[in-house]
Amino acid sequence: MLVRVSSPSHVYAGVVDLHGGLGRVCGLLGFALQEPRVVVEAEDAPGGLAVEDPWSGGDALAYAEEACRLYRCEGARVRVLEAPPRHAGLGFTAQLALSIAWAVAALHRRRFDPAEAAVGLELGLEAGVGVNAFTYGGFIVEGGFPSTSLGRRVPPLVYRGVVPRSWRVVAVLPSRPLRDPGSRELPGCTPGPLESEEEACVSSRLVLMGLLPAASEGDWARASAFLQEVNDRTRSRLAPGGDGEYCCGEAELVAGALRAAGAPCVCQSGLGPMVYSLAPAGVTRRLLAAARRALGEAGGGSAWVTGVDNRGAHISVAK
Image (cartoon, rainbow, N blue to C red; front, side, top):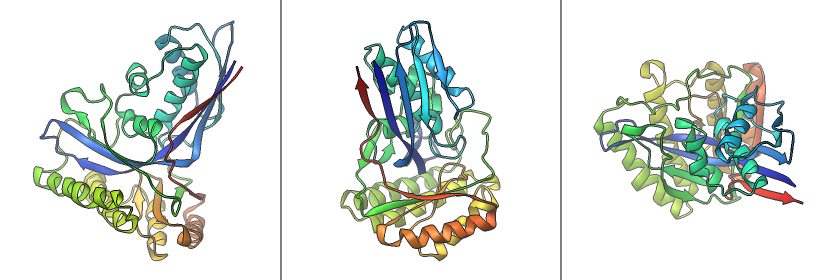
C-alpha cells in the first residue's frame, strides 16, 4: 500500500494577546497557502524504518521515528517529496511532522487526529496555527495557549474564514537571512507579558470588531487594512528594541517595494524573513514584478503568487 499526504504551508499574520492576563497567551492568526506544500509518501517496509529526505536535514527521520512510536508500528518507507524552506515563516516544522504522522498512521490503519498527533510528537509551541491550518485550511484565528501549560495543548480554533480565489497571496522570501531560532518557540509565546493589558485590549478589539466581521462579510479589502494594523502591532512588540522594524534589511526593502506598488497590506510572517501581501488577483502581477525587482537589490530570493488553501491537508491511498 502506498499513502500520500499533501499539506499546505502557512504564514503567520499576527498575535491577538501578548499579555496573557486572561489565562491564555498568543492567539495566533494565519493563512494556509496552496503553495509551497509538504508532500510525503509512505509505504510498507517490513525490514524497519527507512526515510528519504533531501529537504529537512534529518527532521523527517526524527518525526518518522516518533510517529512509529506513537502508533506502535514497526516501520515504513517514508519519502519527503516536497517541503518549504526551513526557518522561513512557512510552517515547515508542523506541516512536515503532521504529514509524516498521518501517512504512517494510515499505512498501519491507525486512527489519526492532528491535535493528538501534535501533542504526541511534542511539537509544543510549533503547533500554533499549524494544526488548524493542516486540519481546516483557510484564514485561521486561534484562542491561544493556556499560560500554565504552554505548548502542551493545541490552541482552539476560534475562527476559520474562507478566502475567495479573487484574493491571492503574493509571497516573497529573500535568500538571506534564513534564521535558525535555536529554541522551538514561536514569537510572542512566552510566559511573561510582552505588552500591557491596555495594548492587548486594542489588539483584541481590532481582531474581534474589525478583522473578523470584515472577513465574515467577505470584505477582504477592509479585512486587509485591519490585518495590516494587527501585523504592525505584533511586529512592534517582537522586533529587537521594540522598534517595529522588519527582521532584516532585505525584508524591509521588499516590504517597501510592495507598499509603493499599492499592496493593500504587507505582512511579515513571524520573525521573518517571509513577507507577503493579501491582494486582489488583478494587482498581483504588478506586486510580483515589484517584489522581484526588490529581491534583485536584496541579493536574490524567490517570489510567487498563490492562493489561500481553504481545504487543509488531504490524503490518497493506492493499494
